[in-house]
Length: 102
View 1 (cartoon, rainbow, N blue to C red):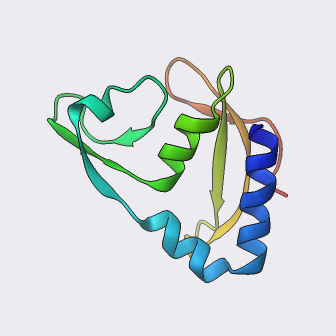
View 2: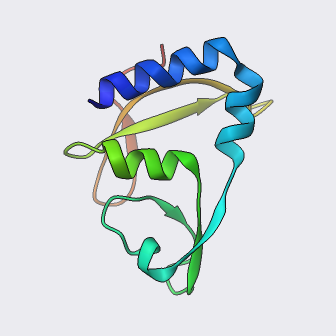
View 3: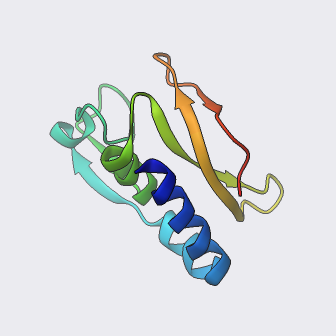
């Protein structure tokens, strides 16, 4: 299922890179209960009462499989999204690419 999600995200990126970039920059403030969810990825400080949920964090909450997560690749100079792939999330929170972006 995660492979299909990555394929569709790369198709979306190819069809409309500008809209894809804008969409993945969206973020909403969420409460501590969402921050503590076991699979949804939220940005924020561990002791904070709230965090920021972005689309990739929700997608990984839905599609994460045995430590495999969706990775968004960006151009380091422009921060433009250049592709999506699958990575392995270890216990420390580090992601190692399983494959190169399509």
